[in-house]
Length: 239
Ligand code: URA
Image 1 (cartoon, rainbow, N blue to C red):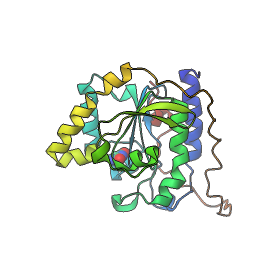
Image 2: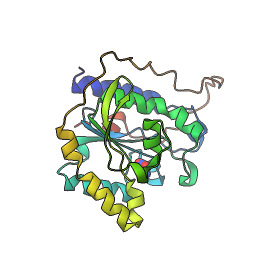
Image 3: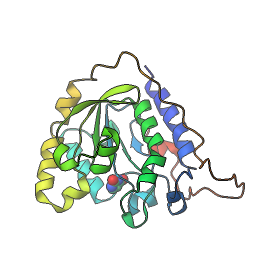
């Protein structure tokens, strides 16, 4: 079992690689890599879709209206950002906030899997379709799955996976907000169950490859797009 500070240091090292990532074309249009923020030792993790314009500018996840709703719901269950870790399926903003493309999800998923592996959460709330489908490896949509927890093996560990509607969807549809709130209020109950039984033999997930696109030639002059990115400590919120 890693200590909190070991987790944080390992996560920072993954972030250092991610911030220079050129694995997919989003590296050419992003302003910052939005790696994730919060408590590296959290029991509860939220995984959204992808950074939007505000997140891309500030380098932090869920800083717009959807993030405000997430903060409000967290407060309703007696929690705050410092208690949880929040990140996205994609670490870079898709232009015009379009949906993530399959090749982008594929290119980015190592980072997410490494985050889950290092944080070792008890409960993962996937927010919306993209993270839910990726972690469940299934195409069933969020409207059927929301509010139904299940034990899933992710990397070497079993976690309680708890799909929720995406807060952005709840901003505009009152019935979705009601469902999200009802589901959200069950999170403390799931956390109280503690970690699920772990598999006997677990396969460690492989180390991350070089974050640069392996098919691309090394170009010494090429500047990775890290303009204005906060330092790792800011992204990881050293609580
Ligand atoms: N929507 C997301 O899925 N993630 C963010 O960080 C912001 C909005």
